[in-house]
Length: 349
Image 1: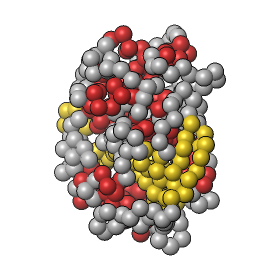
Image 2 (image 1 turned 120 degrees about the vertical axis):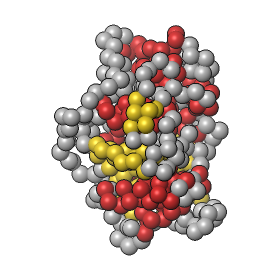
Image 3 (image 1 turned 180 degrees about the vertical axis):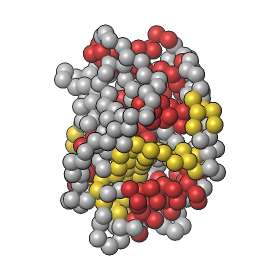
Image 4 (image 1 turned 60 degrees about the vertical axis):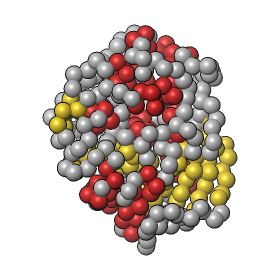
């Protein structure tokens, strides 16, 4: 597991896209739930971890349908209860044991609401997993098995990210090997779950290394919904932070309304408070966890655009690489899958 590490600062990092609002911080957090038909229970705040209320072993694991297959050495269903969030279907965990003595444990989460196994969502997802397993790491794939996964609302992404963060803490405590590294990778909104875990749920205390790919898309939700920010750029060129049709697919279900896709400015304060770079000064942007971004050179969408905002705001050790011929779904091409695997093998320690 993670041991204390010194924080490393990079004075060259430019802070961009961060708007600090000095009033009504607590009220804004409450509003993010009050906008839904769920009332947040007393004492339940967005960065409060939930509880695993039931653990069900699935024996044997369902057979892998990819070739070469990804072994399922243990499969577990976790029922998770989070403050102010409806209880949905259990999250499925598929555990593949390390080859040889374990060097660490790595969580893999897909994009969108994370409602598929990594090996299944990407053309070369099995390669990205198996290479890390063969290098001596235990891999845990997550599957939030509901229509929009961990983004099934209402409540908004910040509150709903409690599901992933609670699952990650359980994996750390119950599957990870003592005194070994604990790491995670996630694509697009899966990177968003990781970012919330670090910035709002205090989990830089358990992660040694995280590797967001093609995201997170929630750095400034207000920019994504209102489409009112200037374009940013990275190795792929000029990037837009506007969600477009993704607002209908993911943000509207997360909030239980159509305010994001309809660009309803009345919800701007809620979106700002729910962002990874939140307006209430509650977000942590200096981590003991190293953050390594991977971008696809063909990915000019809002996920990467929003990721640049978080990348530029981090004040601790972080870096990035670009895979020139990779799309948003990085592990859909061999070069992307190799970059994901190699990044974890070389840096999860």
